[in-house]
Image 1 (spheres, helix red, strand yellow):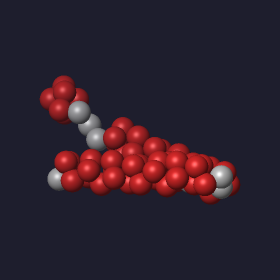
Image 2: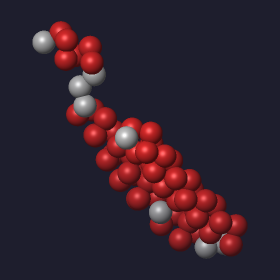
Image 3: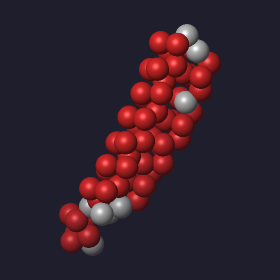
Length: 62
């Protein structure tokens, strides 16, 4: 399950970066930079989700 989630996340990031790069080469800077909020929101979502999961070391100590 973790590998599937990681693959989906990687694909999502690659699609956004690829789209942004293509738009930059086309000269559409507004569209290229328009996806930046999606990347920031995705980063916050992933980091908050990872901080909520306890590590195995923390489970055994308590």
